[in-house]
Image 1 (cartoon, helix red, strand yellow):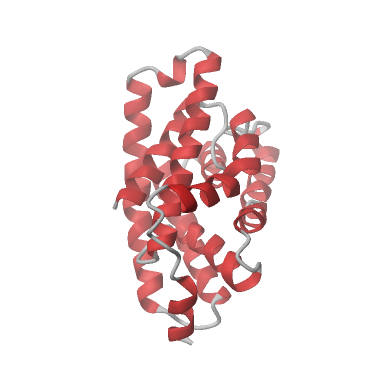
Image 2: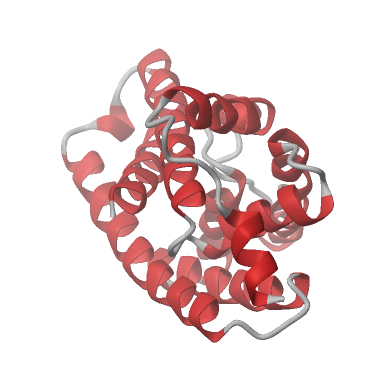
Length: 210
């Protein structure tokens, strides 16, 4: 639960700061501006697609994993919408640009800490972060930075597609560059320094399910 709230709070702070957010959140914002569909609904739909992708990546059906991830994104989307409204109500979106940049980068750092916590616990997590976990340990020899960079490609493509009908790209700014460069490093640092006795158990669980 701590990881979920930390992730939703950080994502909402980066969205409200409007100086760039995590690339998956940015893809949802741009789809929202293009289609008019609610941000929470889009975050949920993206999460379900991620959950299906994970079943393909692990090469077998894991119902507990799938339905746990779908349940996670139901709460995640709701929390993000709530926190964004709250941040807007206290003036985060109208703060001076330097403060919005600082707040957006702080939000990104916070959601990276949340990701680190629930990836290590490996009980239930956002399906997108399970994707990076799967890529990291099944395909990329434990490299957190490489798994993050590879995972950034689909949402960047979505943002590019959404640009053509709208003529604009939102939630992509300096803080997004910070996210692309630093996400993997922040998650790896959180693994080491924040609740360090909580260690990754991904390989053990994978071996048991196979």
